[in-house]
Image (cartoon, rainbow, N blue to C red):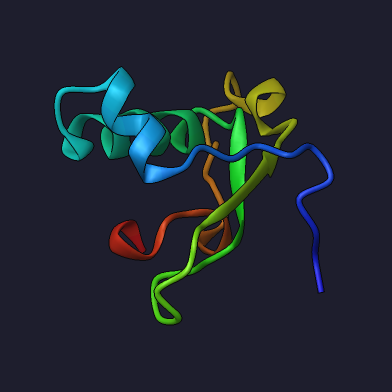
Length: 79
């Protein structure tokens, strides 16, 4: 089982204090994943628990023509 070694987490309640709605927050998370800065470690979609994210070095490969993010690194709604 993977852990959140980098401790990247934000409770929904706190996200709502930073964002006017959660759709914008989720879009920002997806953008960080798409650009290779973070990856989803644990998907809480089916268990109704928090998603866990960790730092990723995939951004270093972003300039490569065939850059892609592994499916397991993405959020459940963006598979």
